[in-house]
Length: 123
Image (cartoon, rainbow, N blue to C red; front, side):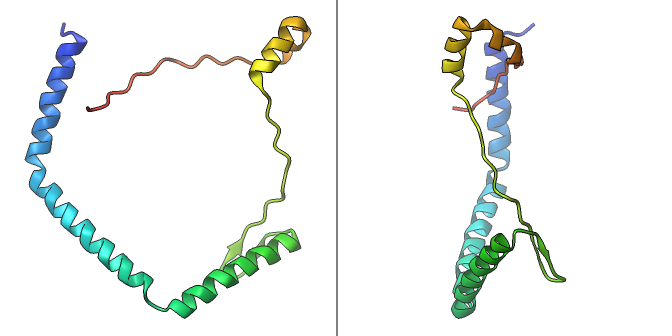
């Protein structure tokens, strides 16, 4: 059986071979991504007045739906509404300290085991 270090050395060899074999395709992809970035930048310059009005109108619509307090559906869009709610969090370190002096609260505590993991990161 191979050691972890030997398996990592073999994995490095395999990945290096894959990278070398795909170098020309990666170069082509980089050129295409640069071209797409240029096209995207050009798209942003089209219809500046309409884009500005769209941003303003979107904010107004969201404010109207919040004020109405319900989801609005049309044949064009659905604007979902979710009412606000209070989010409650606890400082678990302080609660654990409290539980040491008041063990009756421990019956409300839930513990879950998280299995260990390992991740390979290329350096």
